[in-house]
Image 1 (cartoon, rainbow, N blue to C red):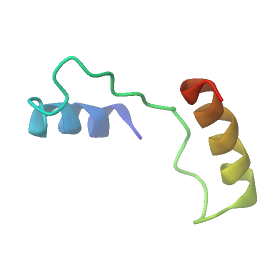
Image 2 (image 1 turned 135 degrees about the vertical axis):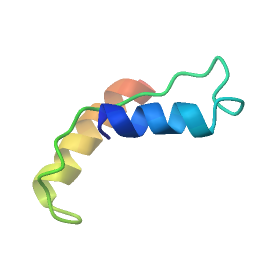
Image 3 (image 1 turned 60 degrees about the horizontal axis):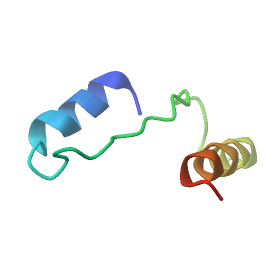
Length: 52
């Protein structure tokens, strides 16, 4: 998710996001759907965020 998308979510859903973190993984949008490299990056980044 790009910063502009995060800002848009905060703008549109400010009440729902009130005092909740919005985490952006800063993964470039350079991958195709279900690209194995992207899946590996997501697993690593999400595990760190979710403390798995």
